Image (cartoon, rainbow, N blue to C red; front, top):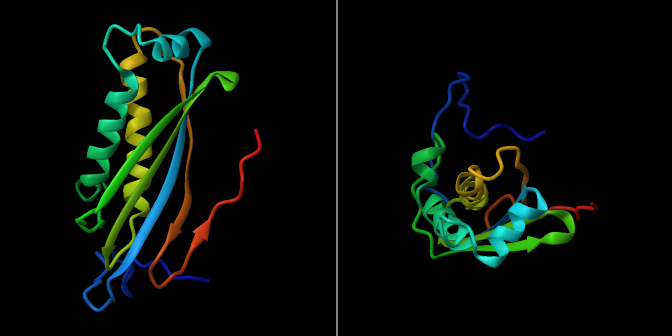
Length: 162
């Protein structure tokens, strides 16, 4: 079984030393969902929300969050991301919004947390913008879809069936 990398021999939390690692291209993709009533989703789709463009605001929030992950998640390294992408898709057949994020860099540590943070904060932003019209929206699931690069190798999540 793999060891937890953020716990030292004494059982204490610590930031992993990546100084001896090789720089490689690393990429991660994550997704999040926000379930809502059909009327709330329609308001987002047709642009009639009084706070403005919900998708544009959520996209910017997700990008900003990826860039600031190291300030939000203890023990994460500050990273020089070379690409952050946040795409939002209305799925009226499921009364939800799907958010997919992508983060990339050439560096010594992965970008999984940045991708997950981007998708999560974009979802939280949708909730924040729409809570005046619906408070019982549901965020989730949030998950890592794929990662590539680095010593631990590549990962790809299985397909969702809903």
